[in-house]
Length: 297
Ligand SMILES: NC(=O)c1ccc[n+]([C@@H]2O[C@H](COP(=O)([O-])OP(=O)(O)OC[C@H]3O[C@@H](n4cnc5c(N)ncnc54)[C@H](OP(=O)(O)O)[C@@H]3O)[C@@H](O)[C@H]2O)c1
Image (tube, helix red, strand yellow):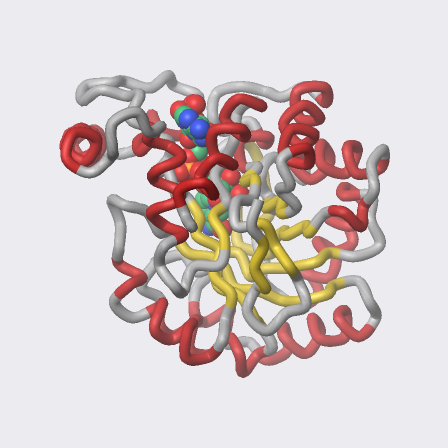
């Protein structure tokens, strides 16, 4: 594994992390504790130390699976990134909750679910600019940093061209940007990445496999089941993406190279990107994702 400093934080993160939206149930299946353990143990075995989760992957459900795991392992071995700003109601239904008091309540719920005294990276979860620009929110969060409940603050931008929140992050004490970036969606290269580089903001590239399409295993015309979040994607967009993936597979991916590993390494080659956080369904996916490092050097 390779490790990099996340912007100006003191966090040394593996360049491949583990995204855990899938633990919340919106990808068409529920996870047992044993299955979550197997995924995280495989990550640890391969040197992965970064977990990304959120308050609304289920009602703190993903955090609870991670917390149960951490309670039986060495907490210090992991960099735990989670998020704030939404209240989960049921699958695919959340409401915004970025008010300062609400966020403090969410923080306590996340700490309890994660069974930890501190969160390494606490990220503004893809909220609107008006919520981001609420100084009272950042003042209250800074107090939580002073109290030791949060080590560092981050911003997960919703649109991957959100210059406003990227530019203002340093000002509000946020030191990392989480953003959609992958071989099918290079938008951040234009405006967001240059700001991150200029301001030494760490970058977590999310959805680095374009929701799994860049694994190369889905052919154009694939239809996803009703409980899989991909069922909600626009069918025409998905068709075009899968056609493009087919072309990329033929023209850009070297023979014999696993396309998922290649797609992650592709993200990591951009100098602004610190780490990628692919969602992993099982230990085999963790293994193939970790192999991206062999293609980076
Ligand atoms: N607003 C936000 O802050 C936000 C939004 C979205 C995501 N995120 C974070 O980013 C993480 C990653 O995004 P994502 O999960 O949406 O998309 P992704 O990482 O692009 O795709 C994940 C999916 O790709 C497939 N996959 C993963 N590794 C594979 C491998 N080695 N070989 C073949 N298939 C593989 C799996 O699905 P199948 O096997 O079923 O195809 C997996 O569920 C999330 O887990 C979450 O932590 C944050």
